[in-house]
Length: 366
Image 1 (tube, rainbow, N blue to C red):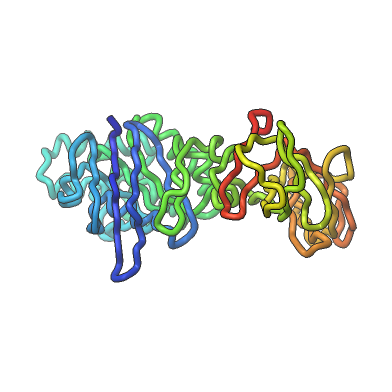
Image 2: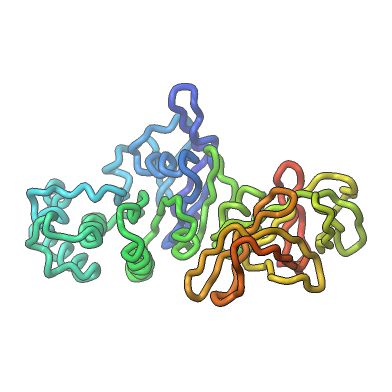
């Protein structure tokens, strides 16, 4: 039995449907990440699980118990927000213990839980400080510690790293992942940052316009996106898309003629003939190579180069007006204004129909 189960969950704000009959199962001790663009419904879905929003339909089950009619305090959850929401007049110890004191826990139990959480988060030395004397990362640890002491069934995180600088975000990603392993807890985490999703999740839930587009392990979504939306959202930089038409077919796959006249053979198994139909070819930046090699080639003019040390990102304007992003080695020779050809292997391509759905690919391509 799944530990958290959503059945036909729906939410409307006036006439706007923001969650559309969502079905989802999350296993015990799983780190699940809801990811998607702003406004896709991921935070609303988290708030429905927490009981901070009332559903217009459907059911929520946690640990085998239906909880959608229960108040937040009775659901066995603890939530960490983007805003730390610490009481400025209280010490770290008082902030972390506040919920337990309100619930009339024994003082000895409170101290044991707070000190254990402080040790896990390495903030014991700050227990007598006020929040104003802490850095952003330390405040976020206190907010997480306040959740840990409650010993909830499920931890809910609503973009908890958004207020941190880039270096601290990377550090906190590592720490949260380690915390999950240490606590063996069920965690649901909301972010718009697909890098956070890829690096932290056991399972990713990709959302768009109130719907779940695809659920799976990070590399499964990366290698086999269900549709063009997932392909564009998972992966950084995003997948390149080239428009074309199916111009031939045999038992191993299809030939696609691109809109600039280039041709590529894509291995895939199809149950019907798509000859003449419009398709979109997807190729990831790391699968494009500088130079006209054996295989398919396209050309364009470099309009931007980003050098990051070990990696370089090259941005190219194709002759037909479309843009490409290429992930190349850090020392690659590339200058603004250069006219350059790029080659790629059809085995590395993804193929999408006019509706954006992925067409079946052969095992050799994946």
